[in-house]
Length: 333
Image (cartoon, rainbow, N blue to C red; front, top):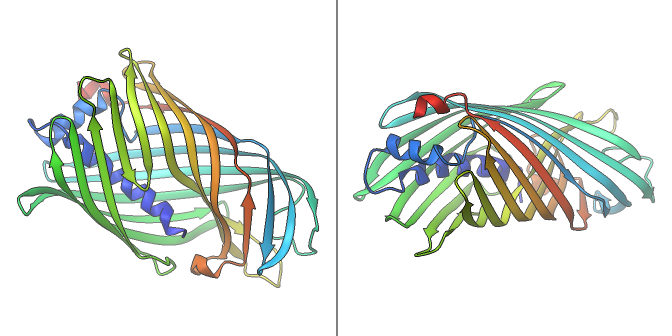
């Protein structure tokens, strides 16, 4: 698991937005996209989310030696994001994105405490992270099938300033597209010298079950969900999503570098409930169980395989509430 997997999730989302907007066999790409956005768009123009994971025990290692163990009493997150297409034609879509993320951890009952303080300490610690991106999507044909190309340039940092410049390129070929089923196959490559695995295959599968309100939505490795509409204004999803947090940690210790990157990868299993309040606004609730896959601290710019710190956390419950605004929804009609 590497820091670049956050870029992978980000890029998969961008590609899937365009892929599944072409689910209808008739009509242009733009017309199909409008039909999808009139329901529940996959990417929200302006989105706010607050989340919290509950208490769990953890143990950690520093330089492969036992470091600390104790309890993460809770972890709170807040995310605000803007995704704004600023140029589009039948062949090209350019999107500008911005994101602010805040992570707060509350530790208690730490044991076997080392004299070195890098990340964990009794009490509350918080981390701010910022990210901006410009992405381009190009629609074409390959082997007689629709293909979607995507490229992104991403910059990020924290409240102490700019930290990294990253990039990626990807493509996805629509292998099958019928009234009820869409299958795509593709790949993404990262322009980031710190990644351990610079190349990922991608696969998506979406299927509406015959004579059933349920649909199956699978994006490797982002999500596996079963979905259905409840009335005209709400939708329920059951399954699992892959995600995580990544932020910079500044260290004030002459024995260590000034800046580290912390990556936390997780699988969230449970339900997602979305409700459209109006043409312009949607609320979302998520809840269930979080399983933590990988939690590492690495010197900035170094491969995550060279991490100096890691921890293991027990599964725990989580919930997330969101509110999104699409100021252009009225114009789309």
